[in-house]
Length: 229
Image (tube, rainbow, N blue to C red; front, side, top):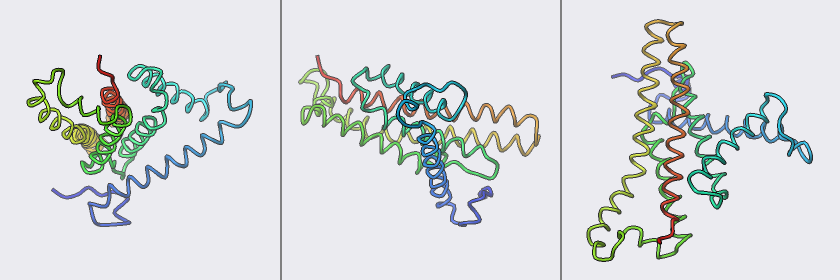
């Protein structure tokens, strides 16, 4: 099955590099939007005043409030220090998901390697936080609730943890690939009217997949930093 044409083919004909360039473009857009958001925030009194109308500042305030609600729901108030990293994960995934909806573009997250890379980041994040929180005692999380089951629970928990980044990546990649494939098919068949419905659906799926990935990452951090009672 041949590769679909994308605007990145003007840069490279190596299909392995196309998701990399897509990730570069998404990252560049995120940086530009973030700079614009910081400028829109203002300084001094203006920075702490809520936006009075629809604006870039208002969108960023809504995004921060949304992420703060997610973090509080999963990790509680002590999870506030994690807000920047989970906000970055969500923002990165949304931009990479949405860029695939643009005609002639492809999404980095539709590639299993790119999606798996974000899963590996989540894997190192929650294990790092687990060791940071409990030290060597973090390993008790892998040994089950009672000591005499440790011989059984340890290999199960190790395999379960090693599979998590792969499952995160596969879930994200498969959903984005299927979504963009359906959209592309209906664009080829009907050109204008019907694809508008699938653009709306694709936008919804892009946000949902970013939400699910970020939420699961939060849950893994919560489990890694939970104290045994």
